Every structure is written in C-alpha cells, then in structure tokens.
Amino acid sequence: MKNILSFVEKSKQNYLDELKTLLAIPSVSSQSKYNPDTRKCAEWVRDQFKKIGMTKSQIFETPGHPIVYSELISDPKKPTILFYGHYDVQPVDPINLWTTPPFESNIRDGNLFARGSADDKGQIFIHFKAIEAILKHERELPINIKMLIEGEEEVGSVNLENFVKANKKMLKADLVLISDSAMYAKGLPSICYGLRGLAYMEIEVVGPNRDLHSGSFGGAVHNPIQALSEIIASLHDEKGRVNIPGFYNDVQKVTSKERQAFKRLPFSDKKYMKDLGVGELYGEVGYSTNERTWVRPTLECNGIWGGYIEQGAKTVLPSKASAKISMRLVPNQSSKKMEKLFTNHIKKIAPKSVKVTVKALHGGEAVVTPLESAGVKAAASALNKAFGKKPLFQREGGSIPIVVQFKHLLGLDTVLLGFGLPDENAHSPDEHLNLDNFFGGIRTAIYFYYELKNYIKKT
Figure 1: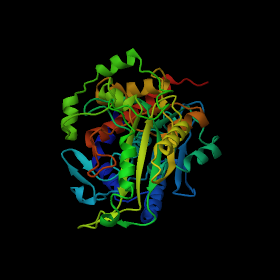
Figure 2 (figure 1 turned 60 degrees about the vertical axis):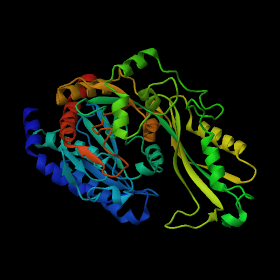
Figure 3 (figure 1 turned 180 degrees about the vertical axis):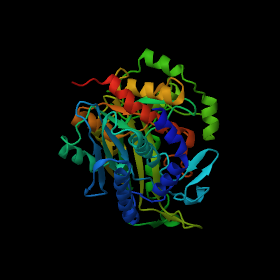
C-alpha cells in the first residue's frame, strides 16, 4: 500500500495532464452538433481502459450515444464491483458567465475549472487512476471490477435500462459503486446513502391561433404567458406545500432519529444564504433546509418561455407559452403516478380560454441504501483512512435514475462515494473540482478496493 500511495503522490502532474485531455472533449449529449465529440469521448474512455490494464474494453452502440464497458476479473471468489459513471456533460450556456473557456482546463485556488470536472469526468477518472496505480505494483486487483460508462446520463439515460436488461449476466456483481455526488463540505468526507426521484414535465399553453398585436387584442384574449404564470403560481400554497391533490399521499415520514442526525451536521442557514446570494430561504414550513432538500418532495419550474425576448420592443400577444417543471420525489412516491397526478391537475385547473398540453419527459425513483450494508461500511473505512476523518452520512436532493434500475434489474445496492463539493457549480458556469478531493478520491478508491474484501466474504 505504501508503494502504491507513493506512486500516486509522484504522479499528480501526470494525472492532471491526462484529465485535462479528457475535459477538453466537448461531449455535450443534449446537443447534436457535439455528436462527433461525444463519440470521440467514448473512444477515449475505451482507450483509457486498455491503458490502465483493464480487459474486454469495448464500445456498445445504442440508438443514442454509445456505452463503454470494460472489466478485470482475476478470481471469481473475490468481491465484484460494478462501477457506473458517465462521460457526457451538460451544455455550457450561458458562455459569458465562464471566467475561462469551459473546455480549456484552468487551475485557480486549488480547483480545476472545466465543464465535466466534477460531473462526472473528474470523478470517473479518479477510479481509472486508482486501478492503474494498483496494477503498477501488484499483479492483480484485490477485487474484481466491471466498469460501465455511459454517454446519456445528462439526458435521462434513455438507453441504459435496455442495455442493463440485455446484459444482466455480464453485469453480475456484488454491489454498484458510483462517484457522481458531492461530499457534505470541504474537509468533511461523507457518504451519500439516499437520492430523490424525479418526474420531469413540460407544459404548453396555446391561446389564439397566431401572435396578435397587444394593443389591438390585449384585454380581449387571455395571454398564454399570463395563463401559464397563473397555473405555475397556483402549484404552491402559502406554506410552501405543493398544491396537487394526492402529492403527499405516499411520502414517508422523516424519522426522529434521522432528523436528529441532520441537526448534528455542521450546517448554517445564514452561510447557505450568503453563499447563494439570497436574503431569505423558501420552502415547506416545518422542515429544516436539509430536510426540505433531501427527504421532502418538491416541485420547481426549471424554465419558462414565450413571446418576444429579443432586443428592443415588440408589442405582441403571443400565441403560446411553455414551461418545464420537475418534481423531486422521495421513497414510496412513483414517478409514473406523479406524472399522472400532475397531468390531471394541470388539465383540471387550466382556464377554458387556452388549450393546455402536458408531456412527461423522463423520470426515476428515489432510493436509500442501508447504512449497515457491506459497501457502505467499506466506504466509511476507506474515507477515514484516506482523509484522516470519520465520514458523515447524508442524503442528496438530486436523482440518479439508474440506481433504482440497478436494484430492480440486478438486485444490487449502490454505494455513492462522491468527491465533489456542493458549491462546485455542476451544471452551471465555472464548474470545478477541488484538487485535494481529487487526489484524496484516488487514495480513497484504492483503500476501498482493499477494504471491501474484509466486508464481503465469498466462498
């Protein structure tokens, strides 16, 4: 172990140079103009697998972006990890808010800035280098590992479920490992044991059959932007609760034990507000900020558009307006059921003066991994050794739909061993990854591989 960790220390600059090469590939999965780059990124990942000593490295085609798979099996009696990550990234808009170009890596104040640095290229690269470091000094890994890296996570993993269904035997493992989440705070290693689910919707409101002159027709025709705004505004009551009948029917109550655990975390509403630049927090009355973002369901408007938004004035009464709305869900809430509840409610409250269409774009279920599971225990021990501190345990407000699919299709619990930080601007301009966490992540991954065999005994 000493030689392996010493090698990691000596290789830091090489690791950064390699990671910068990966981050320079603009693999934006949601925009077709980047399709050649997304393909190039998949090929880079495949070649990296071969470079670090993995076997059976190959690209699997899908109707969308390719999936890259590799494995290294040395002994069937060893524990087997199925590592999941993604090489695709979010769009970079608005580009003018980036301090440096999004695909040109820049190091400032101990952080590496680039699109994909935290989500998720930097975090999957941590495991590439951990595997490589071990194999430089040992003939084989202490565990078997299978690596599944997709290119559509940022667009809902639309082809991944079918791939998993078709390859259950190939993907057989003892647990799933994902590094695509954040630690609780800098200097505080943590393990995420719960994710919220998601139901993502789109509303289109259509009024007149064409755009109209607002002077000639204003006051006689219901403006679709106004109608849409009224619908959205009605979706919460004065206590911050979602105003959809049945929305809370299946929600699990937060246990007193968990609420007490959240209270012990070093969290400050004042610091949170200062970091976000807001004067007051908003949310469901009766719950703390962590509870509202981790264990309570929410509804948010993610985007709204309609009418004239270019420079100057155009006095138009638009024909239509649209919005995208996401609902974050908690255990026991079904995304399909919430889609139906949402759709029925919107159609019921829509004024007769407009026509409303509701579409479900994608969704996934919430998941909680037992703290007593072997993978969580091994991860806690590995973090303690790598960072010199016992880790905290937290939930996460975001969603990784494939976690539920791994449980349902493969019967596997997932360990969420993330090395990002909450303020690293994933999905936003100036995304970055803290370098202490990056190198600490490599050490943690190495320890985790060795620790796991102490917690999973196979015969």
